[in-house]
Image 1 (tube, protein in one colour):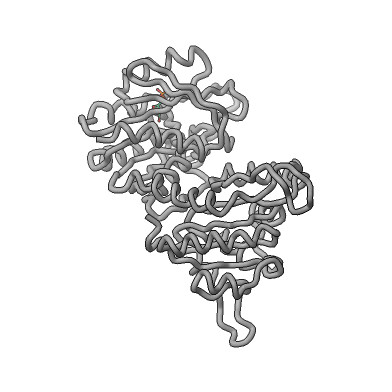
Image 2: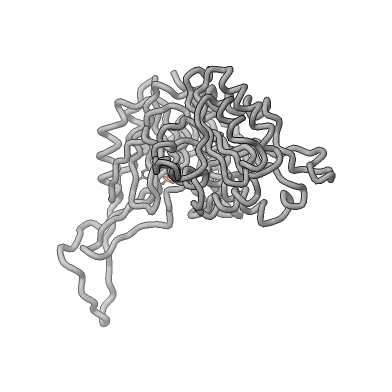
Amino acid sequence: MLNGKKILIGITGGIAAYKTATLIRLLVKAGAEVKVVMSATAKQFISPLTVATLSKNPVLADFFNPENGEWNSHVKLGIWADLYVIAPATANSMAKIACGIADNLLLTTCLSARCKIMLAPAMDLDMFQNPMTQRNIQILKNQGFIFVDAKEGELASGLSGKGRMAEPEEIFESIEKYFTETQDFVGKKILITAGPTREKIDPVRFISNYSTGKMGYAIAETLANRGAEIILISGPVEIKPINNKIQLVSVESAQEMYNACKTHFPQCDVAIMSAAVADYTPETTAPEKIKKDSDNQMILKLVPTPDIASEMGKLKTEKQVLVGFALETENELNNATNKLSKKNLDFIILNSLKDKGAGFGYDTNKITIVYRDSTIEKFELKSKAEVAQDIADRIYPLLK
Ligand code: C5P
C-alpha cells in the first residue's frame, strides 16, 4: 500500500529522534520512497549518515550545500511529497510552524508543502502540558495537521507522564491509515458551494453576510485529500484552496452561484451546499452610486434568489447525493428537518449559533446531522477539519 508513496520525514531536535531511524526502515521496507530533512539540532541526536543510509537518499538540512552551492529547494520538496511526517516534533518546532516561521529548511518546507503534514510530538511532560504548547497543538489541529498523539510513560528526563513520542510502529500505522482512508473518494466528483454571496445594490454597495467559507473549504480540502475531484463554487472569501484537485469557480451573486451549480451538478456524484446564499437580492442594481437624501427614507425592494439546494434537489438523480446545511437560531431541529425534505437532501447538517465556538469565522464547529429516516446524530465541538472528516465519513456509505 505504501509502495511508491513519496514520504518526506522531518526530524527535529529531540531525544526521540533515534526512534525515527526505525520508522524510516519500516517505510523503506514497505516500498515507500523516503527523503529526510533535519533541523540543525536534530543532527546532534541522530547522525545524518545513519539517516541517509536507511532512507537511501542524502539528508537535507541546509538551504544550500556550502561546498558546491547546490540549492536544496523547499518548494520542490514540498511538491514532491505525498505526505510530510515530522517525528519527533518538538515544542519549539511546533510553535514555529503554528506561527508560520520558516528559519530552517524543515520549517520552510512546511510552508511550501502541498501535501498533508503529520506531527508526532515528543517532549517532557511539563512542556507538553504547558498552555502555550497546547494552544499551538490546537492551532495546528484547526489547520488540518494530522497528529500521532504523544504517549504516557517514562520520559528521557527521568520523569513520568505524557510527552513520549508514539512508537515508530504506531506512526507507521498512522501513515498507512492515512493512505488507505484518504483514497476512498478516488474517481468521485464533488461539487461544494462555500462562502457568502454578494447582492449588488449599486456599483459600491452590496448585501451579504458573515460567512467566511472556512467550513466549505475544509470539506473541499478533506475530500480532495481523500481522492475526490472537487468543483468548489465559492463566493468572495479571504481563503484559497490548497489541494490541486480543487477546481475553484469564483462567483459573486446567488444567481451566478446557481448558474455555476446548474452547469457542474449533472457531472457530479455528490453536492454539498455549504454556502450562505443570500435569500433576497435587490430587484434592480443602480447603474451609478445612489446619492444620499437625508430628508427621505431609503427603501430597497428585494426579490427572492434561486434556492440552489432546492433546485439541485429537483435535478438530483438516483445516483447522486445531496447534502445541505442549516444555520438556525430557533426551532433548530424542526426547521432543519423541514429543509431536509423540502430540498430533497440526503442529510442536513445543523449548526447552531447558540453553541460557543460554532458558526461564522470560528475554526471550530459543533454540528448535528439529521438523516432522511429522522435519525439524529450529535457531534462534539471539533476543529472544522475534523468536522469535515465526519461529514465525509457520513457521505461515503451513500455513494452509489
Ligand atoms: O433555506 P436555508 O437558506 O436556511 O437553507 C440552507 C441550505 O440551503 C444550505 O445548504 C444553503 O447552502 C442552501 N441554500 C441555497 N440557496 C439559497 C439558500 C440556501 O443553496 N438561495
